[in-house]
Length: 360
Ligand code: TXA
Ligand code: MG
Image 1: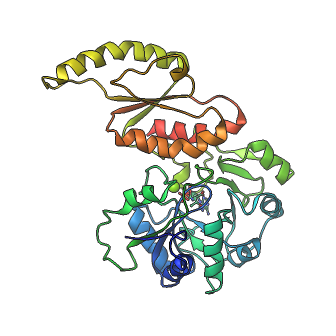
Image 2 (image 1 turned 120 degrees about the horizontal axis):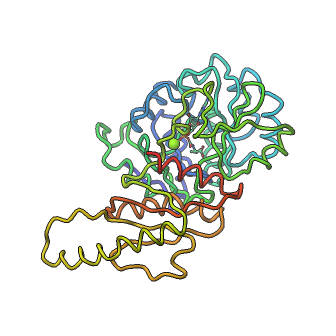
């Protein structure tokens, strides 16, 4: 594993672009989450992504492009609704699914006849994609830089956690994961995905952009393929699997009142168990972390219960979500009790990720 930090090394971007040009793996920052990248035009390089993640090879990846013109290289047509969405939100946290040009990026698209394209809005990603374009690489395929089914990374250190024990990757070899550090990701949850390849546009994955923002820009209504009511025509897409984004601990969503009364039940048991721990005996109590927006303002946390506050506004909650889940998971708890997010549309992305984590 090699770390490249543009803040410390003036040639980090050039080294990273050369790494991709050579066909190697490079984790790169975007404004949403870190991606595990390889050049999209090289099926052997793309195969390294699937191997490192442990992801089935028929799951399509998102291809990252430096600008809308570069996107045209990958498509057989760019439907008008996709053009309107791209005009409104690129560079930014939006992925459009459009018909793929049959001669390009077959492996990156997981063999589908469509392709997911995104132009990220992160200064390091943009410099990297420009440096790639100078080497005639018009797209970088990159799923989130986590192992299959795990939480997406929003810091370079998370990527290191995911891949530092990478089996079978020789130091310096093309399978070894290199990491380009771009600091913490601003958005914090993955891009909004809109399928524009099937007539009416379909929201496949909510993100920072709200449904009404998308519909305003699209100029037409969107269908929404929710996890509870999945669209049977949707292609296999790991981000759309119900049990995705899972920490090791079991995630349970509760209302604020349910959290309070559940704590009332377990706190005496935790106290008893802590007493017993001085004379260690096996005890079956679940070890619990509690993640709440409002509870800790009026209730003193018990010293045996790990607790963290969820930010009260949706954008900050998204920014912190995956880092906080990783932090709670790392304490070794069995369960993470999460206060269910409010109903507003600005919470759709956070609510989607939490319900998937809870379904795992
Ligand atoms: O924010 C993001 O989108 C991040 C950053 C790195 O750009 N990437 C990301 O990639 O979340 P990934 O692979 O973890 O999720 C991409 C989702 C998957 O559910 C994938 O199946 C879906 O996009 N996808 C990609 N191409 C597709 C296609 N042609 N048809 C349907 N779904 C597609
Ligand atoms: Mg992912």
